[in-house]
Length: 183
Image (tube, rainbow, N blue to C red; front, top):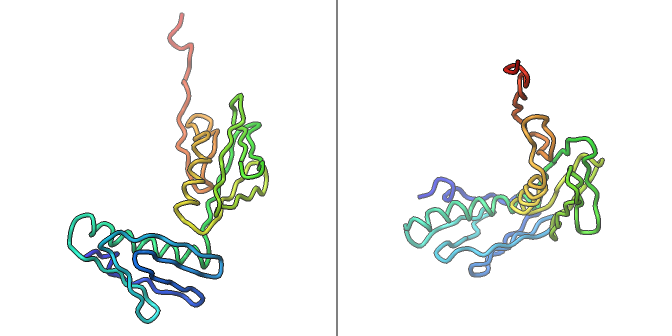
């Protein structure tokens, strides 16, 4: 049995989980999220805990057993506290500006790069060089943050680009002496 899948998900106060066939809905103080469980995976609510079971012992069901439990655990955390990713924009003249439901990034290209912001994700700009992505869905928050970072990944020579605030960019030394071999 899956080590992660067999552990029950404990529901904190104010969080309600509803199982409707293969549909699992989680409601909390910040909002609600839902997922569709794979055929063969069932969820049961037992004394403030949600327990997952699988019908057969196939490879895919073993994998989805633990995955379903982890997704519900992240949903419970999302509807109670939410998720957040912080990014930094490093470089002379690099900045971010909100334009409706798009984040416009000026990151050293001739054109402005626009990143679409889906429903369920909020963007905060404390200043033009810092972006904070928040929301209930851990996967969606991480994907939007990765899309913003992909606009200009940090380069190893000067460290310019978009990076996560806790990311360490490994720096490389430039050419030691370009004219050393010439006479």
